[in-house]
Each structure stands twice: as C-alpha cells, then as structure tokens.
Length: 154
Image 1: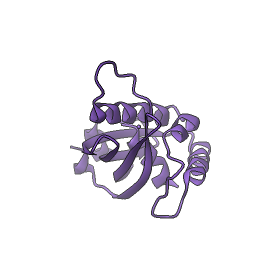
Image 2: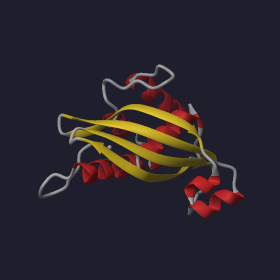
Image 3: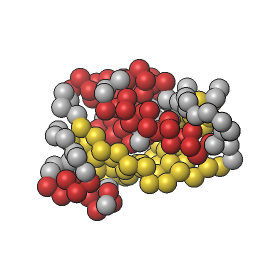
C-alpha cells in the first residue's frame, strides 16, 4: 500500500498539458508529472486516477481500480502524509511512449529538502514509470519500484 501511494506521488513530479505552441512530448510528460505531484500532495485521488490508464497493471497484479482503492485507503489511514518527489530522467520512445525515472520519499512530517532525509524516518523509493499518450493525455500504464536510500535524493 505504501508503495502504491509513493508510486503516484513520484509519478506526480502525467494527463493534460496546457502547453501552447508546438507539442514537445517530453515537456508534456514533465508537466503531467507536476500535475500528479500536486494531486498527491493534496490527496486528490480523483485527479490521480485520471492519470492512470485503463490498461494499467503493476507487478503485484493491481489494475487501475485496485490502485485507486489502495490510494484512498492509504490517505484515510495516514492523515499526516508528506511527499518529496524528484524526476531524474524522462526517456521518450517516439511521441507516444515514455519512461520516467523518479524518486519519492514519504514521511509523517514535512520534507523541505533532500538533505532533511538524513535526520528523519521516511520511506524511500525509486520508481520507473511507463507512460503512454492516450486521447491526448499522458497516463501511467505500468510501474516498477525498489527501495531507495537517502543519498539517491542528493
């Protein structure tokens, strides 16, 4: 459950891009990540769900509905929920698919900067998100994750 919450929090750092001018797929992916990050920080599961593909499947067999339910449960259970999310790399595979490497830290207290992680108890994760452009919006179709360490955030 914690991994699911961290997953979308990190993904937050994919949907509609209000970019004007010529489309830049990488910029659209990064803008989507920012939208998701804001939704995760404010516990807006409906916005997070909008950024999960109907085709989503994770390594634990969760689909879109199961992930949304898990996020709702997580937010209800953890009233104090603070996230630090960092996108390290966006790799485009054409104009319709992307891979995003990101890190997320979840803690019961505010995380002001990566350096704060050395002095607090937080759950740290490295995520690989696979995104696809569907009907003009970037949505997550799959994730992979592993534990991270504080120095990964520096």
